[in-house]
Length: 261
Ligand SMILES: [Zn+2]
Image (tube, rainbow, N blue to C red; front, side):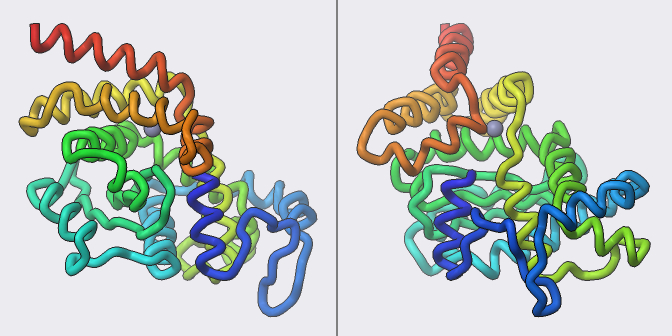
């Protein structure tokens, strides 16, 4: 995730990775100081589910604006559209998909039902593998993993300070606040339990949608392979947010073996 964000940050001409100092209102401030000062305010903030969805929406709009989106007129964009045209919604959430033309082998979901796939992943994976990864990401949405991660990221970012002062989340976040939020959300890591649950969701998703039951196992195997090859830098970070990929691949393969037996 970090690698991806960094790539995107470079594309934007800003480095999100180095954010000890950010600009708010044209004034450079020390993020760490703000975060410490805001600690008490942050604790008093309660975020409703609707608040988190609203923040997620703002975040993803900002990501879409600041990343090279491969539109439906591009090969990658058309492929993703073809693959996901039947996936409209899950648990009352509308799903929407886009591909970012960045080299990273990654994908992520947001609490509002937005799923973003990086070009690097589209390049190395076949249709079944891409769909399995999408099923995995939908799993993180369904289980509210991404909403929880967004909530934590929000409360860790400087944005909460402004919200605390203004007394509501309805107000639009500034570019710097969204940058902060992106950085905090990008650092979010899911637990092994959450990853296993998302893998299980991917497996079910493949079966339900008539996709190769080995899709997830193959996708994970590919990630394991890539992590030791020349493209390792593009997958490295995905591994820290997706621990034990080898174990996970084996688990998925056994599941598919059982199913196809
Ligand atoms: Zn995951």
